Image (cartoon, rainbow, N blue to C red):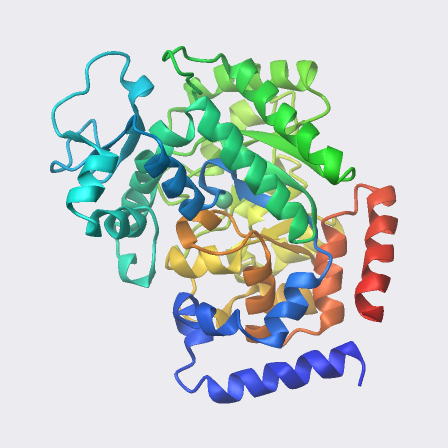
Length: 422
Ligand SMILES: [Zn+2]
Protein backbone atom coordinates (compact mmCIF):
# COMPACT_ATOMS: atom_id res chain seq x y z
CA UNK A 1 0.00 0.00 0.00
CA UNK A 2 1.24 3.50 -0.76
CA UNK A 3 0.79 6.42 1.61
CA UNK A 4 -2.52 7.50 0.04
CA UNK A 5 -4.03 4.06 0.54
CA UNK A 6 -2.61 3.64 4.05
CA UNK A 7 -3.83 7.04 5.22
CA UNK A 8 -7.25 6.56 3.62
CA UNK A 9 -7.65 3.16 5.29
CA UNK A 10 -6.84 4.69 8.67
CA UNK A 11 -9.27 7.52 7.95
CA UNK A 12 -12.11 5.14 7.08
CA UNK A 13 -11.44 3.11 10.22
CA UNK A 14 -11.42 6.21 12.39
CA UNK A 15 -14.61 7.65 10.90
CA UNK A 16 -16.41 4.32 11.18
CA UNK A 17 -15.98 4.28 14.96
CA UNK A 18 -16.82 8.01 15.40
CA UNK A 19 -20.56 7.37 15.50
CA UNK A 20 -21.35 10.69 17.18
CA UNK A 21 -19.51 12.53 14.38
CA UNK A 22 -17.49 14.35 17.05
CA UNK A 23 -14.70 14.98 14.62
CA UNK A 24 -17.08 17.02 12.46
CA UNK A 25 -19.15 18.75 15.13
CA UNK A 26 -17.05 19.07 18.28
CA UNK A 27 -13.44 18.33 17.41
CA UNK A 28 -12.12 19.31 20.87
CA UNK A 29 -13.91 16.28 22.28
CA UNK A 30 -12.53 14.08 19.49
CA UNK A 31 -8.91 15.22 19.79
CA UNK A 32 -7.77 13.29 22.89
CA UNK A 33 -8.65 10.00 21.20
CA UNK A 34 -7.55 11.10 17.74
CA UNK A 35 -4.12 12.03 19.09
CA UNK A 36 -3.58 8.38 20.12
CA UNK A 37 -4.00 7.07 16.58
CA UNK A 38 -1.39 6.04 14.03
CA UNK A 39 -3.04 8.48 11.61
CA UNK A 40 -2.30 11.35 13.98
CA UNK A 41 1.28 10.17 14.29
CA UNK A 42 1.59 10.20 10.50
CA UNK A 43 0.38 13.81 10.35
CA UNK A 44 2.58 14.84 13.25
CA UNK A 45 5.69 13.52 11.49
CA UNK A 46 4.79 15.10 8.15
CA UNK A 47 6.95 18.06 6.99
CA UNK A 48 4.73 21.17 7.25
CA UNK A 49 6.02 24.16 5.30
CA UNK A 50 5.22 27.50 6.93
CA UNK A 51 2.43 28.54 9.28
CA UNK A 52 0.89 31.46 7.42
CA UNK A 53 -1.81 32.61 9.83
CA UNK A 54 -1.18 32.82 13.58
CA UNK A 55 -1.68 35.64 16.07
CA UNK A 56 1.37 35.70 18.29
CA UNK A 57 -0.67 36.81 21.32
CA UNK A 58 -2.71 33.58 21.15
CA UNK A 59 0.00 31.22 19.93
CA UNK A 60 1.68 29.74 23.00
CA UNK A 61 1.35 26.74 25.25
CA UNK A 62 -1.22 27.57 27.90
CA UNK A 63 -0.03 24.75 30.19
CA UNK A 64 3.53 26.03 29.96
CA UNK A 65 2.32 29.55 30.77
CA UNK A 66 0.39 28.29 33.82
CA UNK A 67 3.39 26.37 35.12
CA UNK A 68 5.61 29.45 34.66
CA UNK A 69 3.02 31.52 36.52
CA UNK A 70 2.82 29.04 39.39
CA UNK A 71 6.60 28.78 39.62
CA UNK A 72 6.87 32.54 40.26
CA UNK A 73 6.00 34.08 43.64
CA UNK A 74 5.14 37.44 42.02
CA UNK A 75 2.14 36.47 39.90
CA UNK A 76 -1.37 37.63 40.80
CA UNK A 77 -4.85 36.56 39.72
CA UNK A 78 -7.93 38.75 39.63
CA UNK A 79 -10.59 36.80 41.50
CA UNK A 80 -13.14 39.58 42.06
CA UNK A 81 -16.10 40.12 39.70
CA UNK A 82 -15.13 41.59 36.33
CA UNK A 83 -14.59 45.37 36.16
CA UNK A 84 -14.08 47.72 33.20
CA UNK A 85 -10.35 47.46 33.92
CA UNK A 86 -9.77 43.83 34.88
CA UNK A 87 -11.09 40.44 33.74
CA UNK A 88 -12.13 37.67 36.07
CA UNK A 89 -9.26 35.09 36.22
CA UNK A 90 -6.88 37.56 34.58
CA UNK A 91 -3.23 36.94 35.44
CA UNK A 92 -0.55 39.58 35.95
CA UNK A 93 3.05 39.76 37.02
CA UNK A 94 3.67 42.20 39.88
CA UNK A 95 5.83 44.42 37.67
CA UNK A 96 2.84 45.11 35.41
CA UNK A 97 1.08 47.17 38.12
CA UNK A 98 3.84 49.78 38.45
CA UNK A 99 3.05 50.19 42.15
CA UNK A 100 0.61 48.75 44.63
CA UNK A 101 -1.44 45.67 43.80
CA UNK A 102 -5.04 46.91 43.34
CA UNK A 103 -8.01 45.45 45.22
CA UNK A 104 -9.42 42.19 43.86
CA UNK A 105 -6.04 40.65 43.01
CA UNK A 106 -4.70 37.68 44.98
CA UNK A 107 -1.26 36.14 44.94
CA UNK A 108 -1.65 33.22 42.50
CA UNK A 109 0.38 30.65 44.42
CA UNK A 110 -1.43 31.35 47.68
CA UNK A 111 -4.82 31.39 45.98
CA UNK A 112 -4.19 28.05 44.23
CA UNK A 113 -2.79 26.51 47.43
CA UNK A 114 -6.03 27.44 49.20
CA UNK A 115 -8.33 26.64 46.26
CA UNK A 116 -6.69 24.12 43.85
CA UNK A 117 -9.72 24.25 41.52
CA UNK A 118 -8.65 27.78 40.50
CA UNK A 119 -6.00 26.34 38.19
CA UNK A 120 -8.61 24.56 36.09
CA UNK A 121 -10.85 27.63 36.19
CA UNK A 122 -8.06 29.83 34.79
CA UNK A 123 -7.44 27.28 32.03
CA UNK A 124 -11.12 27.22 31.08
CA UNK A 125 -11.40 31.04 31.15
CA UNK A 126 -8.38 31.31 28.83
CA UNK A 127 -9.77 28.91 26.23
CA UNK A 128 -12.82 28.76 24.01
CA UNK A 129 -15.07 25.80 23.25
CA UNK A 130 -18.34 25.18 21.42
CA UNK A 131 -20.33 26.13 24.53
CA UNK A 132 -19.09 29.69 24.08
CA UNK A 133 -20.65 30.18 20.68
CA UNK A 134 -23.48 32.70 20.74
CA UNK A 135 -24.20 36.19 19.41
CA UNK A 136 -21.63 37.60 21.86
CA UNK A 137 -18.81 35.37 20.71
CA UNK A 138 -16.49 38.19 19.55
CA UNK A 139 -16.54 40.26 22.78
CA UNK A 140 -16.08 37.04 24.78
CA UNK A 141 -13.29 35.88 22.49
CA UNK A 142 -11.47 39.22 22.66
CA UNK A 143 -11.80 39.28 26.46
CA UNK A 144 -9.74 36.08 26.64
CA UNK A 145 -6.69 37.92 25.25
CA UNK A 146 -6.82 40.32 28.21
CA UNK A 147 -6.50 37.42 30.67
CA UNK A 148 -2.89 36.65 29.74
CA UNK A 149 -1.48 39.90 28.30
CA UNK A 150 -0.16 41.10 31.71
CA UNK A 151 1.74 37.89 32.27
CA UNK A 152 2.90 36.77 28.80
CA UNK A 153 4.39 40.23 28.19
CA UNK A 154 6.60 40.02 31.27
CA UNK A 155 9.95 39.87 29.47
CA UNK A 156 11.43 36.71 31.06
CA UNK A 157 8.13 34.83 30.53
CA UNK A 158 7.81 36.13 26.98
CA UNK A 159 11.28 34.84 26.11
CA UNK A 160 10.63 31.47 27.76
CA UNK A 161 7.18 31.03 26.17
CA UNK A 162 8.17 32.02 22.65
CA UNK A 163 11.44 30.14 22.64
CA UNK A 164 9.38 27.07 23.43
CA UNK A 165 6.75 28.01 20.81
CA UNK A 166 9.28 28.33 18.00
CA UNK A 167 11.25 25.24 19.03
CA UNK A 168 8.07 23.18 19.14
CA UNK A 169 6.89 24.58 15.83
CA UNK A 170 10.15 23.40 14.29
CA UNK A 171 9.74 20.01 15.99
CA UNK A 172 6.21 19.83 14.56
CA UNK A 173 7.81 20.13 11.12
CA UNK A 174 7.21 23.82 10.46
CA UNK A 175 9.85 25.82 8.60
CA UNK A 176 8.68 29.10 10.00
CA UNK A 177 5.73 31.27 10.87
CA UNK A 178 4.16 34.55 9.79
CA UNK A 179 3.00 36.07 13.07
CA UNK A 180 0.32 38.74 13.14
CA UNK A 181 0.91 41.00 16.11
CA UNK A 182 -0.81 43.98 17.61
CA UNK A 183 1.43 46.51 19.36
CA UNK A 184 2.35 44.76 22.59
CA UNK A 185 4.04 46.38 25.54
CA UNK A 186 6.67 44.12 27.04
CA UNK A 187 7.70 45.05 30.59
CA UNK A 188 10.73 43.97 32.60
CA UNK A 189 11.37 43.12 36.24
CA UNK A 190 11.31 46.81 37.22
CA UNK A 191 8.13 47.54 35.31
CA UNK A 192 10.00 49.39 32.56
CA UNK A 193 7.98 49.35 29.35
CA UNK A 194 9.98 48.31 26.29
CA UNK A 195 9.59 50.34 23.10
CA UNK A 196 7.74 48.93 20.06
CA UNK A 197 11.11 48.46 18.33
CA UNK A 198 12.46 46.54 21.32
CA UNK A 199 9.51 44.16 20.95
CA UNK A 200 10.60 43.35 17.38
CA UNK A 201 14.22 42.98 18.53
CA UNK A 202 13.10 40.50 21.18
CA UNK A 203 11.18 38.34 18.68
CA UNK A 204 14.08 38.44 16.21
CA UNK A 205 16.47 37.44 19.00
CA UNK A 206 14.36 34.42 19.94
CA UNK A 207 14.09 33.35 16.29
CA UNK A 208 17.86 33.66 15.89
CA UNK A 209 18.34 31.33 18.89
CA UNK A 210 15.94 28.77 17.38
CA UNK A 211 17.87 28.92 14.09
CA UNK A 212 20.93 27.59 15.92
CA UNK A 213 19.06 24.27 16.08
CA UNK A 214 16.85 24.65 12.98
CA UNK A 215 18.80 26.81 10.49
CA UNK A 216 15.87 27.12 8.04
CA UNK A 217 13.37 28.35 10.65
CA UNK A 218 12.30 31.92 9.97
CA UNK A 219 9.81 34.27 11.60
CA UNK A 220 7.99 37.06 9.78
CA UNK A 221 5.84 39.73 11.39
CA UNK A 222 2.60 41.22 10.09
CA UNK A 223 1.86 44.39 12.00
CA UNK A 224 -1.85 44.51 12.83
CA UNK A 225 -4.49 46.93 13.95
CA UNK A 226 -8.21 46.54 14.70
CA UNK A 227 -11.20 46.51 12.41
CA UNK A 228 -13.96 48.79 13.65
CA UNK A 229 -11.69 51.76 14.49
CA UNK A 230 -12.27 55.17 12.84
CA UNK A 231 -10.46 55.28 9.47
CA UNK A 232 -8.57 58.45 10.43
CA UNK A 233 -6.69 56.53 13.15
CA UNK A 234 -5.20 54.10 10.60
CA UNK A 235 -2.59 56.36 8.88
CA UNK A 236 -0.59 56.64 12.11
CA UNK A 237 -0.38 52.83 12.30
CA UNK A 238 0.55 52.64 8.64
CA UNK A 239 3.35 55.12 9.27
CA UNK A 240 4.65 52.81 11.98
CA UNK A 241 4.35 49.85 9.61
CA UNK A 242 6.47 51.74 7.06
CA UNK A 243 9.03 52.38 9.79
CA UNK A 244 9.12 48.62 10.53
CA UNK A 245 9.49 47.85 6.83
CA UNK A 246 12.48 50.14 6.59
CA UNK A 247 14.17 49.11 9.83
CA UNK A 248 13.38 45.38 9.82
CA UNK A 249 13.15 44.21 6.19
CA UNK A 250 14.24 40.73 7.37
CA UNK A 251 11.01 40.15 9.35
CA UNK A 252 8.39 42.75 8.41
CA UNK A 253 6.09 41.56 5.61
CA UNK A 254 2.83 43.48 5.87
CA UNK A 255 -0.09 45.19 7.57
CA UNK A 256 -3.44 43.70 8.58
CA UNK A 257 -6.62 44.76 10.41
CA UNK A 258 -8.06 42.09 12.67
CA UNK A 259 -11.23 41.47 14.68
CA UNK A 260 -14.90 40.94 13.97
CA UNK A 261 -15.52 41.68 10.29
CA UNK A 262 -19.18 42.37 10.92
CA UNK A 263 -18.45 45.26 13.25
CA UNK A 264 -20.20 47.74 10.94
CA UNK A 265 -17.09 48.99 9.10
CA UNK A 266 -16.12 47.04 5.99
CA UNK A 267 -12.96 47.19 3.91
CA UNK A 268 -14.46 49.70 1.49
CA UNK A 269 -14.70 52.10 4.43
CA UNK A 270 -10.94 51.70 5.00
CA UNK A 271 -10.01 51.63 1.28
CA UNK A 272 -9.12 55.36 1.01
CA UNK A 273 -6.40 54.97 3.65
CA UNK A 274 -5.30 51.45 2.72
CA UNK A 275 -4.85 52.12 -0.99
CA UNK A 276 -1.79 54.27 -0.31
CA UNK A 277 -0.51 52.13 2.55
CA UNK A 278 3.10 52.13 1.32
CA UNK A 279 3.46 48.59 2.72
CA UNK A 280 2.03 45.24 1.60
CA UNK A 281 -1.51 44.81 2.91
CA UNK A 282 -2.43 41.26 3.96
CA UNK A 283 -6.00 41.22 5.17
CA UNK A 284 -8.48 39.12 7.14
CA UNK A 285 -11.47 39.01 4.79
CA UNK A 286 -14.50 36.80 4.28
CA UNK A 287 -14.63 35.52 7.89
CA UNK A 288 -18.34 36.15 8.04
CA UNK A 289 -21.76 34.58 7.70
CA UNK A 290 -23.47 37.85 6.79
CA UNK A 291 -25.17 37.74 3.42
CA UNK A 292 -23.77 41.14 2.38
CA UNK A 293 -20.12 40.79 3.51
CA UNK A 294 -18.11 41.60 0.37
CA UNK A 295 -14.76 42.19 2.03
CA UNK A 296 -12.91 39.80 -0.28
CA UNK A 297 -14.04 41.77 -3.30
CA UNK A 298 -12.94 45.03 -1.65
CA UNK A 299 -9.61 43.44 -0.71
CA UNK A 300 -9.03 42.48 -4.35
CA UNK A 301 -9.74 46.07 -5.39
CA UNK A 302 -6.85 47.03 -3.11
CA UNK A 303 -4.59 44.57 -4.93
CA UNK A 304 -4.26 42.26 -1.91
CA UNK A 305 -2.43 39.00 -2.64
CA UNK A 306 -3.13 37.17 0.61
CA UNK A 307 -6.42 36.76 2.46
CA UNK A 308 -6.94 35.65 6.05
CA UNK A 309 -9.73 33.02 6.02
CA UNK A 310 -11.50 33.91 2.75
CA UNK A 311 -14.31 31.74 4.03
CA UNK A 312 -17.32 33.27 2.29
CA UNK A 313 -15.65 33.40 -1.14
CA UNK A 314 -17.96 30.60 -2.34
CA UNK A 315 -20.84 33.11 -2.29
CA UNK A 316 -19.28 35.12 -5.09
CA UNK A 317 -18.26 32.92 -8.06
CA UNK A 318 -17.06 35.89 -10.10
CA UNK A 319 -14.77 36.94 -7.23
CA UNK A 320 -13.56 33.36 -6.79
CA UNK A 321 -12.56 33.34 -10.46
CA UNK A 322 -10.46 36.48 -9.92
CA UNK A 323 -8.89 35.04 -6.75
CA UNK A 324 -7.89 31.93 -8.68
CA UNK A 325 -6.56 33.83 -11.71
CA UNK A 326 -4.49 36.17 -9.53
CA UNK A 327 -3.21 33.26 -7.42
CA UNK A 328 -4.32 35.02 -4.23
CA UNK A 329 -3.40 32.94 -1.20
CA UNK A 330 -6.17 31.89 1.17
CA UNK A 331 -5.07 31.34 4.77
CA UNK A 332 -7.74 28.87 5.85
CA UNK A 333 -8.15 28.15 9.57
CA UNK A 334 -10.74 25.35 9.85
CA UNK A 335 -10.78 24.81 13.62
CA UNK A 336 -10.87 28.52 14.37
CA UNK A 337 -13.84 28.82 12.02
CA UNK A 338 -15.73 26.17 13.96
CA UNK A 339 -14.96 27.61 17.41
CA UNK A 340 -15.96 31.12 16.36
CA UNK A 341 -19.29 29.76 15.14
CA UNK A 342 -18.85 30.02 11.37
CA UNK A 343 -18.90 26.28 10.54
CA UNK A 344 -21.00 24.08 12.85
CA UNK A 345 -20.09 20.97 10.82
CA UNK A 346 -16.49 20.88 9.57
CA UNK A 347 -17.43 18.69 6.61
CA UNK A 348 -19.41 21.69 5.27
CA UNK A 349 -16.40 24.03 5.30
CA UNK A 350 -16.15 25.75 1.89
CA UNK A 351 -12.36 25.36 1.73
CA UNK A 352 -12.83 21.70 0.78
CA UNK A 353 -14.18 23.05 -2.52
CA UNK A 354 -11.45 25.72 -2.84
CA UNK A 355 -8.80 23.00 -2.66
CA UNK A 356 -10.59 20.79 -5.19
CA UNK A 357 -11.02 23.73 -7.55
CA UNK A 358 -7.28 24.45 -7.44
CA UNK A 359 -7.22 27.68 -5.43
CA UNK A 360 -4.07 28.68 -3.59
CA UNK A 361 -5.05 27.35 -0.17
CA UNK A 362 -2.86 27.14 2.93
CA UNK A 363 -3.98 25.78 6.30
CA UNK A 364 -3.32 27.43 9.66
CA UNK A 365 -4.41 27.42 13.29
CA UNK A 366 -5.10 31.15 13.95
CA UNK A 367 -5.20 31.19 17.82
CA UNK A 368 -4.05 27.74 18.98
CA UNK A 369 -3.62 28.66 22.67
CA UNK A 370 -7.26 29.69 22.98
CA UNK A 371 -8.54 26.74 20.94
CA UNK A 372 -6.21 24.29 22.76
CA UNK A 373 -4.96 22.91 19.44
CA UNK A 374 -1.50 22.23 18.02
CA UNK A 375 0.35 24.72 15.83
CA UNK A 376 -0.80 23.08 12.59
CA UNK A 377 -1.14 19.27 12.87
CA UNK A 378 -4.70 19.30 14.28
CA UNK A 379 -6.01 21.64 11.59
CA UNK A 380 -4.32 19.65 8.81
CA UNK A 381 -5.55 16.30 10.04
CA UNK A 382 -9.10 17.52 10.64
CA UNK A 383 -9.13 18.97 7.12
CA UNK A 384 -7.98 15.58 5.80
CA UNK A 385 -10.63 13.71 7.79
CA UNK A 386 -13.57 16.02 7.20
CA UNK A 387 -13.00 17.20 3.61
CA UNK A 388 -12.17 13.86 2.03
CA UNK A 389 -8.85 15.22 0.80
CA UNK A 390 -5.96 13.16 -0.52
CA UNK A 391 -2.46 13.29 0.94
CA UNK A 392 -1.51 14.95 -2.36
CA UNK A 393 -4.06 17.72 -1.62
CA UNK A 394 -2.54 18.18 1.84
CA UNK A 395 0.96 18.30 0.35
CA UNK A 396 -0.15 20.96 -2.14
CA UNK A 397 -1.50 23.15 0.69
CA UNK A 398 1.85 22.83 2.46
CA UNK A 399 3.78 23.64 -0.73
CA UNK A 400 1.57 26.69 -1.24
CA UNK A 401 2.93 28.10 2.02
CA UNK A 402 6.44 28.06 0.53
CA UNK A 403 5.80 29.36 -2.94
CA UNK A 404 7.72 32.57 -2.32
CA UNK A 405 10.89 30.66 -1.50
CA UNK A 406 12.34 28.17 -4.01
CA UNK A 407 15.15 27.14 -1.65
CA UNK A 408 12.73 26.21 1.13
CA UNK A 409 10.50 24.50 -1.40
CA UNK A 410 13.31 22.18 -2.47
CA UNK A 411 14.25 21.53 1.17
CA UNK A 412 10.59 20.67 1.78
CA UNK A 413 10.68 18.22 -1.16
CA UNK A 414 13.72 16.50 0.38
CA UNK A 415 11.99 16.29 3.75
CA UNK A 416 8.88 14.92 2.05
CA UNK A 417 10.88 12.19 0.28
CA UNK A 418 12.38 11.14 3.63
CA UNK A 419 8.93 11.19 5.24
CA UNK A 420 7.45 8.97 2.50
CA UNK A 421 10.36 6.54 2.60
CA UNK A 422 9.90 6.12 6.34
ZN1 LIG B 1 -6.78 35.53 12.42
